[in-house]
Length: 462
Image 1 (cartoon, rainbow, N blue to C red):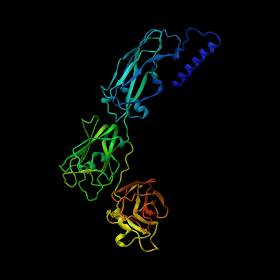
Image 2 (cartoon, rainbow, N blue to C red):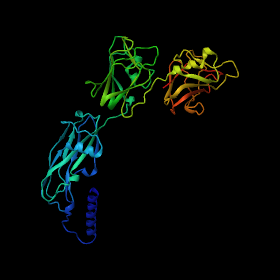
Image 3 (spheres, rainbow, N blue to C red):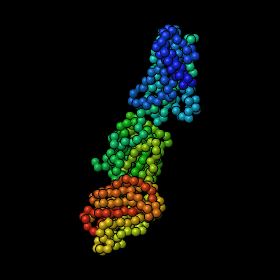
Image 4 (cartoon, one colour):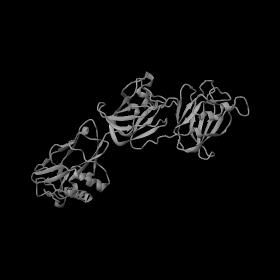
């Protein structure tokens, strides 16, 4: 029908053009079968509007008619309404799941608009939406329709009498932690353990409360409205520290003052891999607050390495890589049993592997080893590395990491041309080509001294 109407207007325009090129056309041309009232925007399908959550949103509406050059049809009064009964009908017909705006969140400044005699377009009515009254974790449909119109000459066209406004909030699903700032905390032990460390992307830094007892909390200003479907969580990584959060409560806020509890976890696992927490229902917020009510050591303090938000695609998470089950199945050299390759994966950075320093048939670069992880593991996203703790100068420099499913065909997932020789901190290197596999090969191509041997303290996958 819409195509027919458009064709009719094209024909009418053609008639006017032809007449202008030949004989004068009549003062009044009418195609009565195409004369009808229509609401502005109704011919365009659903109209999507993404609105700011900080300011009222207004949308103008008017009624017009065509199919004639005679606009002296008398005054026409049109009644408009927002008809939320049409939302379910629209969803059923279009396989959508829009909600109706809640009562009190919208106004129509006038229900009656007029097309004056001699005109073809009415005055304007305005729909205004107050975003502070709307939960923009969802999308909404606002059907504005012509309820009735006076005048015998021009009817209302049922196909073009309703405009459907799809209203979405201007919310960001990505965390964008680089924009976050600290909104407060119960305490900070020392300056180096501030709240900002929980969103710096480094699992080796952490917020540490003071020693005054539980509960302890911190709050973050995300500096923008975020859609939140859950949180990701990483505990402090040091294996000898056990005051990991146990009972944890999450709250969100739009203004940083009024808080709503969105998730309560009575027993958060004491895992040091990333945990993915899902909310019972998604929310929009500008702030979030984490309260640790108890910890696994019953200590008067606690700590957290990393917290972030997520929406949309659920983070893949992590799991126990079961390093204790891994087996070193091949290597170029190790000095002796006290410096075995297996010590790289024993969870202790103070027990290093040392390659053969004296036997000319085994020493020299490159040095390499292969580990059987005992089953196909998901794609390795990165490596956490400790250098040998007593610095001797022959730390690995150019290091290549490869993965394989059959111990025959290898794919390089990280080629570090210059790995840091800093032994004072755990090094974090994301892989450039994450791949799943069972076998891990590490090749030390050069070392920092240019000598014939090298060593590692600890390697952990994530």
